Amino acid sequence: MTIIASDLDRTLIYSPAALALDMPDAAAPRLLCVEVYEGRPLSFMTEAAAALLAELAGRARFVPVTTRTREQYARVRLPGPPPRYAICANGGHLLVDGEADAGWRARVGRELAAGSAPLAEVRAHLERAADPAWLRKLRTAEDLFAYLVVERAAVPEEWLKELGEWAEGRGWSVSAQGRKVYAVPRPLTKSAAVAEVVRRAGGTGPVLAAGDSLLDTDLLRAADRAWRPGHGELAARGWTAPHVTALAEHGVAAGERILRQMAGCLP
Image 1: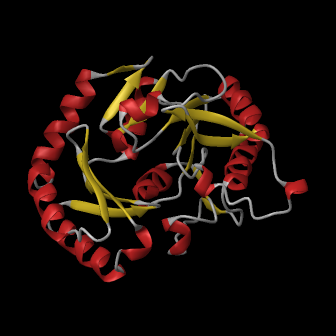
Image 2 (image 1 turned 45 degrees about the vertical axis):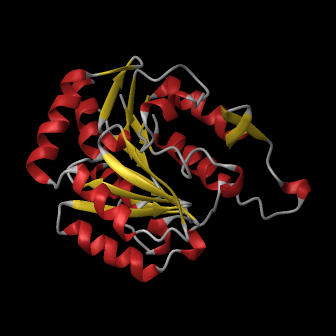
């Protein structure tokens, strides 16, 4: 069976700020809310995308692959049946029928200890290096990685470049997505967790994937066929690969186009 492994935020689901509905009201798509937090609607898909996803989940094995923590992922209500497998914390947690797999988490812990600097060291550096003028929050996620919530327009590009160089020397990578700047250990990858899902699912059938950020690069490279939207870090850098379709669509329309093209790949 085909496995569809897709990033969520800014790939399939969109915050109000990321919808990119720069079109006449008459042409704007109907939206479905798929996440509510503290009484506020937080994430959306087009209704057409929701119908496509529900159809795909019946024809293939759909695997959400997200940098969200398990708690953040649990807020999302995607159309279709609950996925058998889901990947959270950028590959740090593999959920099976909604429960975290302890064996996978232990394996990830061993790989991180062997291949990257400790989280405490990276967090301490972020605390020293971030400017209070644009830093809003500094958080750690699942004891695996750290991220900053920032006023993105005020963050100097040179600061991001220097942070990336510092992190690279310690086995970490940096990704800027919307108002968040992530620092993630290089051994913590979405593609490794998807490979484990493929193994558990019997290792047959192609993998289709989609994503918009640098943290999705390994996932897209490992897939048999992949898509990236016309927005995000990868689009800004012009990144692609022979088996990756670089879409022109931005915002929520890109999520719908990704699902439509994936549906066209299924038998």
